[in-house]
Image 1: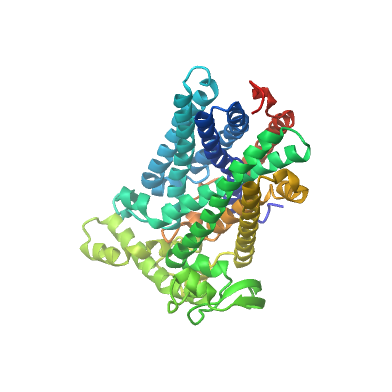
Image 2: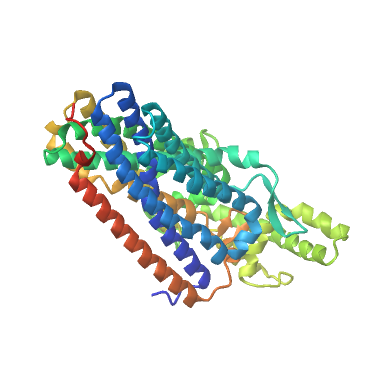
Amino acid sequence: MFESLSAVQLARLQFGVTAMYHFLFVPLTLGLSFLLAIMESVYVMTQKPIWKQMTQFWGLLFGINFAMGVATGITLEFQFGTNWAYYSHYVGDIFGSLLAIEGLMAFFLEATLIGLFFFGWKKLSKQAHLCVTWGLALATNFSALWILIANAWMQYPVGSTFNVDTLRMELTNFYEIFFRPVAQSKFVHTVSAGYITGAVFVMSVSAWYLLSKRHIEFAKRSMTVAASFGLASALSVIVLGDESGYTSSQNQKMKMAAMEAMWHTEKAPADLLLFAIPNTETRENTYQVKIPYLLGIIATRSFSKEIPGINELEASAIPRIQNGQKAYLALQKLRKDRNNLEAEAEFAKYKDDLGYGLLLKKYSSDLNNIDEKTIKKAARDTVPNVISIFVCFRIMVGCSLILLLYFIMAFWYSTKRCFEKSPTFLKSSLLILPIPWIAIMCGWFVAEHGRQPWAIEGVLPTFMGASNLDKSSLLISMTVFVLFYTVLLIFDIILLKKYIMGGPDIFLETKET
């Protein structure tokens, strides 16, 4: 099964599999954290015990999920050192600082607050415990902020420069990395998807209670909070998804073209493909259904800007690869003689395309004698897997629209206070449970696979970032990770099921009011 895969592909597969397992837990943690804060706020304001019961019950499920998320997240960070050693060396000055802050948030601040949340009910005043819960929600999201900023930097590297002496990328402007629109839109878009996941989870479990005619008041109140929170989050996901698409059209043109299977540059404004059957051999779409002008308006926010097609972008990579080759050769001269002013001037002229020159290292370790055919091969490598990206993007968008319609209905039912009167809606709430995870996984696939062949867009090719490991070591470690993570997932499901089946009465202090 894995015989045809290279060591680099296996390292990518291992990281992708472990990341996907990790992200089964993260979105639910993000979503439940703010729902807990909202529920406890209502408890402090109304003094009604049922709201405390809601906070404690959903908090228990949050805690189980949080623990699993931490357990699966640790190995991801270690993989940067084990499987991606050159990547860590090359960009550790930037990426490492962001991961360090994320680690402090996750393992110190969050851990402290989650301990206070669970053990502070009888030791803290209501107001103090409420502050802890809001602090936990904010800390959980701040933890996600740093890793998403790091990922956004990989998509669009700014605030950094290549150091000729150390042969590494080094941080020059932290402010630019943090406040770049790419980073901010990615953060809000991703955490909003987590909020939807938490809201759907609460809706589904509560719907099951109503269908079972158990914990009626608990379930109705939970659904009311989740419906409003979910609707706001669904709108946020779509708005910020549009913003992410716009930034991609500006900074990751090849990813945008692959998402739309746009082989050729179209006259502005470009049409939006609803459906197509891309043919990677002929570089045409066998069958397609379009909405005129819509893509150009959404992606460029104008009627006159073109969106370049895959073929044109591939062709435009050729001169950048040639310039990058010159930058690399000049760098080699500088390594031998740091006082070579001619080489220094040559490198300064072409250094922005050094990453493109590194694409040639896949075919030859000696870049002095590279023919035109090899340069064209390297240019072809800048095209990701169009079919998978095209399909996953449409699954993600379709799921987002389904969730938006669902939460519009849920919000309407909450205003009428009649959740229990519509068995059809309650049953649909059970069926919709996996959809947020499907959308999130497809979204991450598009974001990461669409960036290929780059580990850092335009700076470091993926194949160069990998450690020098043999395939057997990677297969063994990946097998161990998959088995371990599967056990954790099963354990998580068993625990969640146990407490959901038991219901919230374990936290009942007084009769529901």
